[in-house]
Image 1: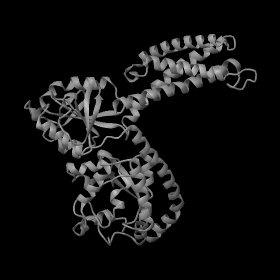
Image 2 (image 1 turned 60 degrees about the vertical axis):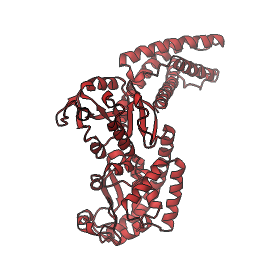
Image 3 (image 1 turned 30 degrees about the horizontal axis):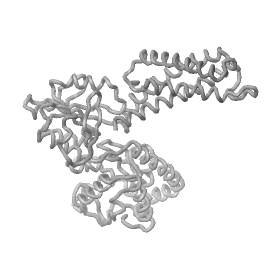
Amino acid sequence: MYEKRKRIEQLLALMLDLIVVFVSLFAAYLIRYHLIFGTAANFDQDWVLYVFMSSYLLVGLAHDWYKKMFMRSWFSELRHILFQEAVTAGIIVLFTYMLHQTTDISRLMYGYFFVINTVLVWAARLLFKAYLYNVYKSGRYGNKMLLIIPSDNAENIIEHILKYKEWYRTIVGIALTDDVTGKGEVHPDYQTFLGYKVVCGGKDLVEYATHNEIDEVFIYDNDLQNTEILTDWVAKLQNMGIIVNVCISAFDIIDSGKKTLNRVGKYATVEYARNIFSLRQKALKRALDITGALVGLFITGLLFPFIAIAIKLDSKGPIIFKQPRVGRNGRIFTFYKFRSMSADAEEKKAKLMEQNEMDGLMFKMDSDPRVTKVGKFLRKTSLDEFPQFLNVLKGDMSLVGTRPPTVQEYEQYSPKHKCRLCMTPGITGMWQVSGRSEITDFEEVIKLDMEYIDDWSIWKDIKILFMTVFAVILRKGAK
């Protein structure tokens, strides 16, 4: 995974450079000839574009200047670009000489191009790195990582991880192993290392991971190698759907789940996970989500006036119901639906808990008195779910996944329940197409969710979407 991510990172940087080369050539030609590139009738410029692009591509690949781009300072980046421009200029001169085209292009245009290109490439790379490191990293797609490390080596480990400036990981806290290795008690209320807070100790690690936003953990403690404590942590965290990175020497501590080689900063690790998805698979799922969301929002826009009027005429309250829900690995987001219940439904829920027909951490009740007349129709036809296409477009939800729990339900989760949140929650899923009205045991829901997560593929999503459409048409499962 680490190598694939690095290759994609380098490919994006190279593509950015090629776009800037085209823009710089366009600008240089405009300044020199006062013409739009490609419009001169007596001058064929196609070969110029090919030579400039090819030269940049060859230089970039040959010297692998994109490999450690994120570790370079702004000044170091400028030095690399100036050297790259000089080498590229030499190759372009050689190409044009071999093609006997040295007199066809103004030397002044060459000068304009290299000055403009140096400035634009430098600015583009700085902006590219700033976006990934400051925006993407802290967004919904960045990984929130918990460090599980000993206090006597904590600062050194953190320094080495930060040195690599990984744009896809954010350290959200430290779990000290001192209380399970006999080095001392852990005081999460006031301990910090290099500004990062200690949030728990080894004894309450699993409990903390169950109820907080964590995508992956990094475990480095030589005193825990090949111990039952480490084996237990990896097994439980992995089963929650959290990615577990352990030092390379611990490759064979557990046989279940999937594992692959990875890297956290300078540290080589074994990555354990309930399921490991490639970047290609993630991109395909996101592309399917965006396409489906756009189609769904278009249909929602057509239906909105009619549904809105019906809801308003039927009962008092807002048209759209909004509620905090729990998404991937504990992230909180605002969940949207067409309102199908009375405006005070949440206040009435506490009084109805005794009539809950679901065994476990989920509420379901036939003939729920909170549901309005229009709400019954919306639920039966699943029209109440349509505003969730906005959640899908934003990335909080997926078309297919597990249903997002309420905050109250999530607070009661045990580690085995947390695993259903290791993927982005969906509008529909295995539970919905398996006859959700007939399922009354939350553990059965968990079983279906795990079946989906453990055997996920893009074709499975497509199959579930088709099954959902048929279920809605035939009005099966919804009440």
